[in-house]
Image (cartoon, rainbow, N blue to C red):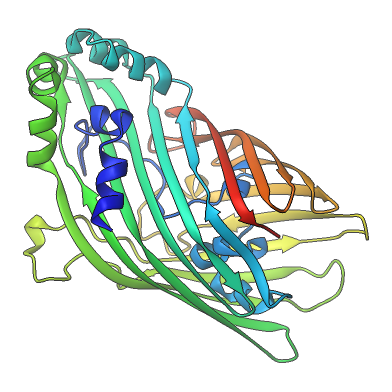
Length: 373
């Protein structure tokens, strides 16, 4: 697991920028709750569709759906490299790699939020069960002028996770009620810093960046679970409902480290999902609405937790997706040849405290190699 963590952390893009991290700063990024794994199809459909995930995606979004796997062997994924990059990220990366003066880099990024993510998962799903090895690195950056001094300050939220997931699902009441649980072992690395434009050259220059990052990183191992309960009354167009309890017990104190040296614990949430899924013999469609963190343990505006989306799939080969994520439009497409599946699209998220505060539009892409549904 440590090898996977170091591999992602030392990628030039993540390691160059991850020194700009902060937790709980007055100028910090208020991005949506991070996940240890993100479903590429859901990004295209507004992050909505929890009732409809399958295969490895079920492990992390809705393990109850494992009970509905129709075949003895569902998905076998050998490798699934996935990337998310904001439109502002490429210019920032070029500036850092070209050794441009960090004072200019920070000053030029004011009001231009950046998010970057790398992910990979390997595993398989079977009837009623699935397992996966996963790695994900997240980085969200924002630069704002200090309201008192007027000096640009770079802040961000960043984490690298790697781990193992194993899930089980069962059906009851004539296959109308389903329950599932995913067990997780996760290793997490997290840094917490805030850098002003005046300090940027000293802290983030050629010689200082790596040492600052190494000094700031906190690491820990956690054991936790996701559990879900799903209702599927039956019928071609009957509504489906799901409640998902995420991050049960997932803190990072394994090994007895003091809390001051541990990465931040994951917030335990209750998520709700609803969908309608009419279709024909040659195609199917889905209309979904999800509300994350129903009890608002994360203390975020409700519109930041609301997701709506739709999907139309033709013969399980071609899919077109669209939706609203936190009030912003999303678009996606996938092509599935059974051996190779390609997902790509455009989505947006709110990096500020409420929709309209700090919009961040990003591209995503994933290539899955193996045997897919």
